[in-house]
Amino acid sequence: MKTYEKLLLENKAWAGEKLMDDPEFFSRLEHLQTPEFLWIGCSDSRVPANEITGTQPGEIFVHRNIANMVVHTDLNLLSVLQYAVEVLQVKHIIVCGHYGCGGIKAAMTQHSFGIINKWLRNIKDVYRYHRHEIDHLPTEEEKVNKLVDLNVQEQVMNLAKTSIVQKAWKDRNAPHLHGWVYSLHDGLIKSVFEMEANTHLDPLYEFDNL
Ligand code: CO
Image (tube, rainbow, N blue to C red; front, side, top):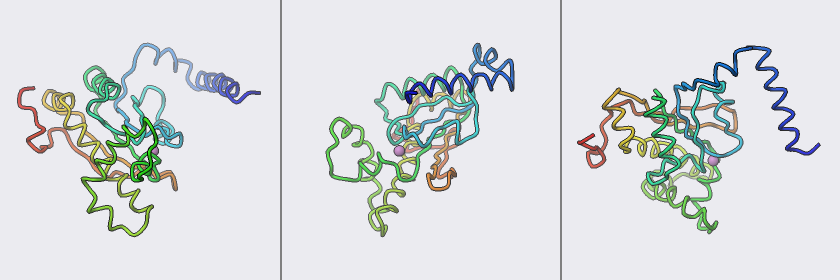
């Protein structure tokens, strides 16, 4: 059997099990999506949002890219964000990084990776803002993991700088923003940063006409 054929077979088995447990499972979800959470995570195959949080289809709206970035000119991210915040009206947005992230590691090197350099530039900027907190750490692993923490924090702040989030904060006092980091080592998530609705930012980034 080809590897991809196994996926289709597994899918059949999964759908059958779901129906056995709950005959209404698919018919209920077919017509309604009301997730409470938007998840912005890394594309890394080892960090699947639903599996590590024990959530089911319908519970988390998901966007993933290399190193869980919130880049304010990324039309893909912004479209997901606007839909999640304005249409689905999610209550929480979670940016979830992970230790040992390959995107973070790559951004800390001087190596050229081709097109991806343009994406990694955003991470290099985060490194530059926080150099003094990172460079004195004794090992490479600690440096990478410190940047993982700080990057998550920076991406949560990038969310707060968008007019989409600021307008929702003003209109409905939500969503609550969370910065989490997942450990590949023990499978546990820890919270490293959060911003409740209407937390004040540097006024330079606060819109006064929303
Ligand atoms: Co990663």
